[in-house]
Image 1: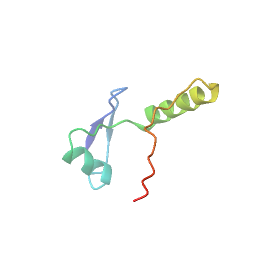
Image 2: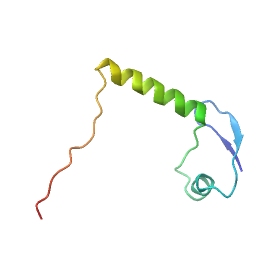
Image 3: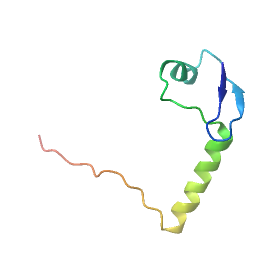
Length: 66
């Protein structure tokens, strides 16, 4: 299965039997990102987190006694 990275538009071949290939075929909202772009985003995120100015906005978990 041929896939294209959404960021760098590099075309790669995936094995059609993998779980990722199935997700890409069956759900059009899923997009493919190559490993180089994924690693670059992870590295930049770690750099921003280490500066102390990075805020991760997650919804607080509510503890329910029931």
